[in-house]
Amino acid sequence: MHEQKRKQPASAAGNRTDWQRGFKIERLRRIAGAFAAQLKPYSFGAFGIPNERDIAAALAEGRIAEECDSCAIFRRLKTTSTQTDFAGRRVQLPAGALSVSHIIGDAAAMIDALSARAVRMAVEIYEEDQATKSALLDLGFAYAFTKIMAGSEIKGVYFRGLKTPPPLADIETHALFNLGLFLSSAEHRNLKDELSAAAGRFAQHYSSYNKRGSWTAFALRGYDPNDPAFIIKPAEMSRAWKEKNGALLRRPCGETRIAAEFPAALAAAARIPGVKERLRFMRLAPGGELSRHADITDRNAGLANGRIARLHIPIVSNPLVVFEGWDQRGQRHGLYFAERGLFYLDQRKPHRVRNSSDQERIHLVVDVFSSPALRALFNTRRATA
Image 1 (cartoon, rainbow, N blue to C red):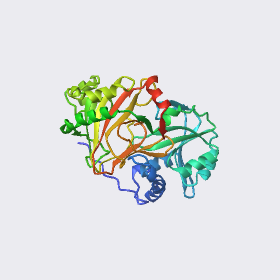
Image 2: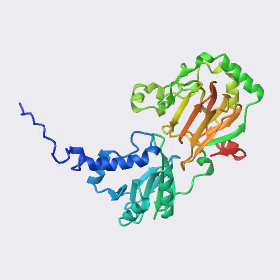
Image 3: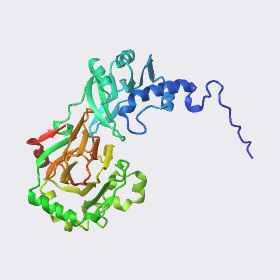
Image 4: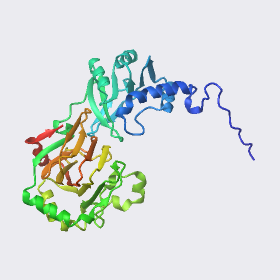
């Protein structure tokens, strides 16, 4: 029998453990606390702010620069690095460039310190951090592209000494878009009648952003024809779910068994140019809320040919139901989706909706494959964001 190894006592100097890489916990906490103090208002997920372990690793590898209360975490690229923006474009950063993943405090002082290490530099910031953004622009950096993170954080990447990619088409920059009046009065009445007869169809939909269980839905087109309550897209689910539900991954999107009960809804959706993917009724209860989130798991979303655009047709609503959307530069935009209208929501960008009224809100949500004919609807309409 092998002799059992004794547990080694912690070092008396700062009670260090292996992950601390020999650094005192007080120092790691101080640096991590400084990052949290500045970045917490812009970070909504679990991994957006460097923690003590991240700080220890960066210090051990010489990837932290400190100037008084200012700090930056960086990496010199040994090989070409390819990054992808929220629109799916691939952007290459060359070997030798300095990639700064976090910066706090006096950005000018930190950039001055880092400039001695490299001329070519890419700095990633939270787009909603206006002070750091302004500092970078004053220092000669140019906005390059935006990444949207799983927690709905908006990360802007700024270049100096590097060629920026061409700007996105204007249509890709909108968070919300008002496409104008869509339903006639008769169509609206018919849709309301269909909903009245189907009030019991709405089923609870689990998600981390469904506050207080206030969001319910059912599908007229979906990935399980026998279950209208199955409103999700299998490709967006976790790896564990996919391993257990392989059959659903192979199913095409099609009409569910109740679709024929909603001829007015099917006719309204048919008037939108393009091949339809999912078609769902979504209800938000009085006082309900969908908290800020971004649907980044659907890599096919967008307005480029072949991607899937999401359009909302409000059936039951009121001015106390307000959509909020954040564009790729971190600007927040609010919009009331009025009944009978047609509205575009770029679900890749952060968005939130609150029903501050005492009435339910019901939208017919149409996912449609983008095409020139669909984009033509945007040319003569009024944009919001």
